[in-house]
Amino acid sequence: MATPIYEFAQLPGVARRATSQRVHKRDRQPGEEPRVGVIYNPRSHRNQGADFDCEVCPHVHIAKPGNRSALPDALAGFAQAGIDLLVINGGDGTVRDVLTCGEAIFGEDWPVLAVLPKGKTNALTVDLGIPSDWNLQDAIDAFDTGVRVRRRPMKVRDLTKDGQSTVLGFILGAGAFTHSIKAGQSAHKLGAFNSAVVAVTGLWGLVQALFATRANPWRRGSRMQIKLGTQRTPMVHSGSGDPDFRQILFATTLEQLPAKLQPFGRLRTGLRLVAVDQVDRRTTAILPLVAMGQIQSNLRERGIHPLSLPEFTLEIEDPFIFDGEAFPPGEYWIGQGPALDFVTPPAAT
Image (cartoon, rainbow, N blue to C red):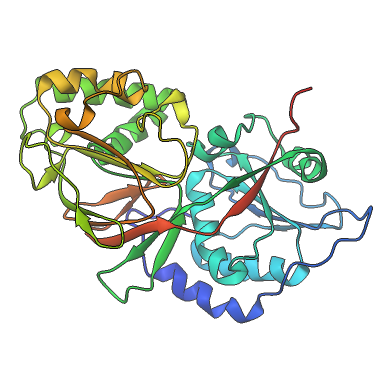
């Protein structure tokens, strides 16, 4: 389900055509097995070469959409079947695509969700506390015996076209973050995934930023304008470097990040972002400590701006990354999507 640059307006239009097929969640009878729909991405890293058993049991419906355009019909079929549990078998990009297509079908009336960590990156499952060996039967069992965790994905709306095209996901980044994703692809080839990728790419980015000039992309960042809230108030700038550029932008609604990162300090819930100006080398050297939450004072004076807010707009001249995939330059609104309930393993006793 991957393309070099995400075709932003493609999927929402397809999903809207499936809206009329949406049905409300059914009333489950006592003792009745939950009805389960599984989106299985055969291209996900840990699914490649694996044979998925499609004959688990009659109440489990499995779809293997070969590309994004097939997702709305698969999800509409699940809605018609009245599923109680939607299982996403894939990485963060698969989650993004399923949520994006599912919004027009389920609206605010989503089934409970479960995610199996089968991608190269699985930041959502890290946040939810899902073990790496969690399987379909574990997710089905957890529907009745597990813990429910509520999360709201970010909603990104393209303002440069019709203003209606939206995508849902959990991690957005720009500037040096975009270069870190490219470096992460190389790390994947060397066998590093999840938190190991964060460590490898973070170390490489730090070396680049410490010893390169501001002409280097890791220090230059991207030309962008960030405007906060419904009033679209321009984000303050520390005066370090070019005020039209931000070295890094990172935003998420996840509460626990891979590698135990805490770039927002004490801000742990809701939509949060941190923007870093073109800071000097002294501040660059402490960025790893800031990212781990070990330095939280005088950040704005240093050119580091952590915030919690309901929405913001981003106008950017370079591609940005949303759940591991590049999106084109433009102007975007970023807010929060629907509240979703995820099943997680039972609490330890």
